[in-house]
Image (cartoon, rainbow, N blue to C red; front, side):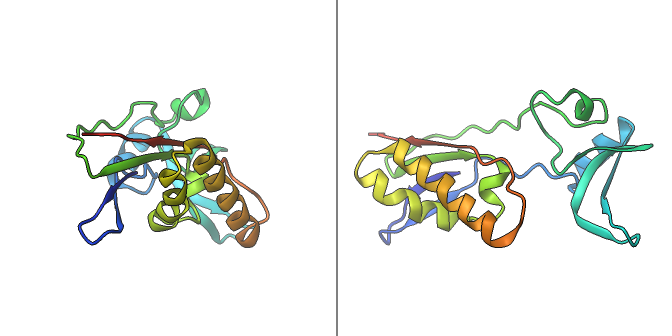
Amino acid sequence: MLYTSSKKGGLKSVPLSEDHKPDIPAEAARVEKMGGRVEPILGPHGQYLGPNRVWKVDEDTPGLAMSRSLGDGLAHSVGVTWEPEVKQLTMQAEDKFIVIASDGVWEFLTNDNVGRIVWPFYLKNCPEQAGNAIVRAAVQKWKQNDTVIDDITCITIFLEIE
């Protein structure tokens, strides 16, 4: 996510990529073409639980809730890909910082939440502290909303564009 200062003095978030979820039609089509299936976890009473996941056709593995991943050989065998989405941007002086984070950050924190967390650290030029604050906030939100905490990884990049 790229954060840009707006003309009104606030921050505007600009997505640098889309979430790569199995329920996006093109992502699901790739998985199904490669012999995978896309559906949520099947609960104890036959009901579907949670988000769509990628599975082998005949086994309940790997159960990945995303359609792109690095280094997961089993998931790659059923259509999950390592190939990135690539976009080109021309950076502007208003562009202040970039946050690259795993789905564990974005599950319960909005783009605006993350921007508000980072802004005071941006003003003090402390990108490492900003990343740590994002991770702490994500962990806190997970503990409030779930019993299991997902992967929470974050990189903050402060920009100085003239």
